Amino acid sequence: MRSVSGMRYRNQEGTKSPWRGEFSDWRTIHGIKVPHRAVAAWEHEPYGIFEIEGAEYNVDVSGKFLADGATRDAAQERRSAKVRPGHSGTEGG
Image 1: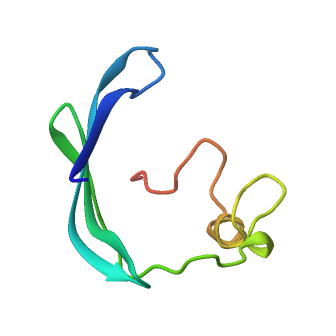
Image 2: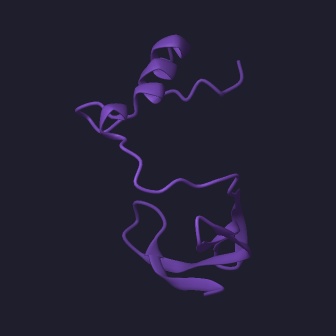
């Protein structure tokens, strides 16, 4: 597999847009070939490049999530950032 594509919801407007994911740099980890690079694009414009540093299989992660589905690390980051609701904390001014 080199790529996947389809029509996906991009925003709240309720209309779908062309989306594509391309995979490359395949390496074998624990006997399974895994792509180590992925590029995601909306309407042929890349918006994300993801590089895999490693992978583990069958890892117990049950203690890593809170009841609301957030990870414990994300919850800690929210508490330490003290971001006001509705703000990402990255706006200027």
